[in-house]
Image 1 (spheres, rainbow over the protein chains, first blue to last red):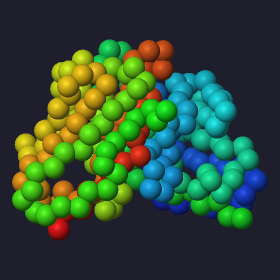
Image 2 (cartoon, rainbow over the protein chains, first blue to last red):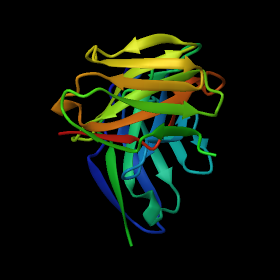
Image 3 (spheres, each protein chain N blue to C red):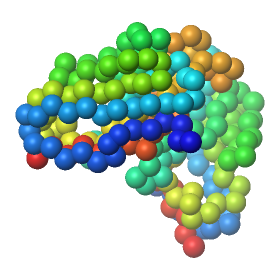
Length: 113
Length: 115
């Protein structure tokens, strides 16, 4: 799997958009970009994933550059409850069984009141 | 209506003991996993089960053994516990489909402390 690079930590003011970058310069054509987050003392939570088109759901938006070497997770109106560690993971789309996901160190996003 | 439930949430035990952590999912998923998160907060996959078949074993010690009585359950048995086994263990499940098998639903975790 392609390796990802994320900033160790970021701050964002409550109510503002939080933009979390991820570099994955060695991504291959069949690898998707997945985002998860882990709020303190909870299990990881799936947020969004995409291949090459931008994606949006009720939680966030995912912007993937045209060359697919980097992406940005956007939380449009951050709240204090969005304080968490955010993981960017690159993985092939498994067809039948699953090989699981490998989590890196992630970005600790702190939402400031 | 918890999707992935683990018990117990907390477990404190002595070195050398044998313990189990149970996991159940009511999502109808085909694959279940166990992850370990150590004190440095790294999440590492330990096992996954698909249709009662082990498809990953990430070089964990053979003191750890997953047991799946049915598709909805994947229990983790640990023999001869060691201090280094202290961690939070997360169960997860997923199902192939349009989203693929990489959309995992995690449980709340079981914190194991070995004294």
